[in-house]
Length: 241
Image (cartoon, rainbow, N blue to C red; front, side, top):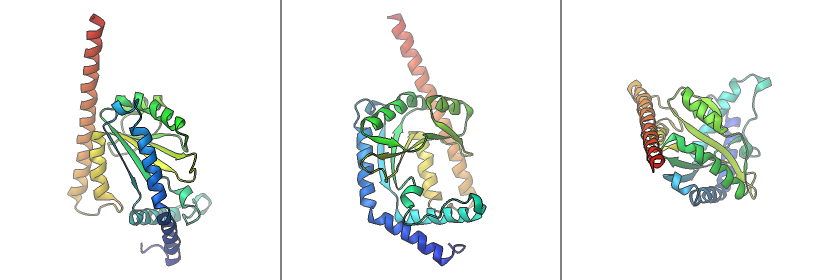
């Protein structure tokens, strides 16, 4: 980026180069984590699908450049560290990411405690308090009661995030995301349009993404309502037996 000096760009380039030398190790760690979760007999019936990926080096470079520009705007006494080849594993949490998709929000009351158990049983360490990106008050209370730290965002979008590492490779932090299929639609479209650099294209394109967020959010609520009615009906039938 033009606003960064050549010396700072070289520091960031060396950080990315270090990641590239161990990217295959991150890939292996991500696969292990995904397999431990997706193949667990208790969790399997609750999830729709799963995937993992390692960070694309070009995307990582752009992300670090954005972070450095933000860092330089911060007051010197509150300024975070410059990401470099020595601390990149400490400063970047999502060099590998695992994603679990499920059908409706209330499933998280079962999925979350199971994830915690599976992580513990397979010697993973939760590095940060699990958080959830959230926009509505009802879901905020639901996730807070489960033990998540709610982080409010303007986008009508909900996604739970964990940062973990294995006991064998504690230096390799991994991001685990859990969200509904409907939230995934918005997330994937927004990611393609706005990542690694936010789109500056037509205003209508950005507005359409915001509309998509509202539609997918409405669909999530509708799916939640369908399963709530379905479960209530089943409970009523069982009570009559």
